[in-house]
Amino acid sequence: MNRAWPATLKVLTGALLTAVSAMPQAYTVSAKPGVVNYIEGDVSINGKALSSAMPKATFLNREDTLSTGRGKAEVLLAPGIFLRVGNDSQVRMISPSLTDTQLEVKSGEAMVEADNIVKDSQLTVKVGSGSALIDRNGLYRFTAGDSPVAAVLEGKATVFDGERKLEIGKGKEVLLAQAKTEKFDAKKQDELYAWSNVRAQYDAASSYQAARDVNASSYGGVWGGYGYSGFANPGWMWNSAFGSWAWVPGDAYFYSPFGFGFYSPGLVGYAPVIYAPVYGGGYYTGNGTASGGGGGTTVTKPVPVNPVRPPVVGGVVAASPAMHEAARTAAVRSYASAGGFRTATGATVPAGHAAVSSGGSSGGHSSGYYSGGSSSVSGISSVSSVSAPSHGGGGGSAGGGHH
Image 1: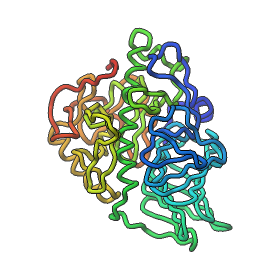
Image 2 (image 1 turned 90 degrees about the horizontal axis):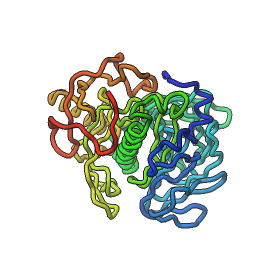
Image 3 (image 1 turned 180 degrees about the vertical axis):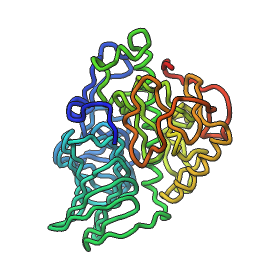
């Protein structure tokens, strides 16, 4: 994977961004690993119930255990790495270190979305008698219980179980009690997968707004005010509009396994966007659709996407990897027939082509989520995930970007 910053330095500084005084008041900086970013339903830490109106400084510290009943939780690990915990589950934080994150799935299920695995850092998930070292960006699922399982939906992991060492890639899982590797059923519907898909959309929308606002508030409205001497470090920013932390990359862009994009303030003006419902606490209803819920009003906002492998849109939330791949293939065809995607500044990017800055770095795209060579931004139309792809205006509500 290509990177646009020295890995060790950035991972040590990533959780505490610079240039705080120049940033909008709505955005305060700093979130250490283990922050609880979002909850639904019954969630507690060490037996103490959490509220959806909890403060932004709720963390899983060393040896803390997060438990869910009929509820789910999203926890932020290192910048660009999301832990999502399913119903009736327990996760113990062993080490919240930026360079050596370790956690245990004690019961139930959890997923890890890794969009930015940094060289010289480690992310280890213990489940049952074994543990999995996540080696690449991707999507991983862990199930505890009598028959613990570590599965790779995207990416690559090294699984250790006693003296045994197994390497598994996309579409494979390890039955830890048997030290056996096999394919998993990619067609099986999964509520946690669908919920993670929705959360990935919200996280990308929040990041986009934060990056746009940082860009607009930099010196003269240009990237130079937040360059290598300032806002080049990746990390988390509190986005009060979303009531959650936003991952803002440094001088690079990344894509999630679900097809959503994360762009630095210097590159956010080149991000292809769709318009999707992002307010109201969206969640998976179990019947293949996303619901607003959450007591708020759902509105559409710009969400950055991977133009090569875009997300599933149209209000349907895929509940399995196979459903997701089929839906995103259809989405590529739909976007291509509509002319592609439009950036917030009005530039166009064809579906199936990479979006890059003509003057910035295109580092940060990850193997498996990105294909094709770098290309200049050229030709696309705006698309709506609420209705059929449509042409016209691409402006977002948050700040200016440059092009």
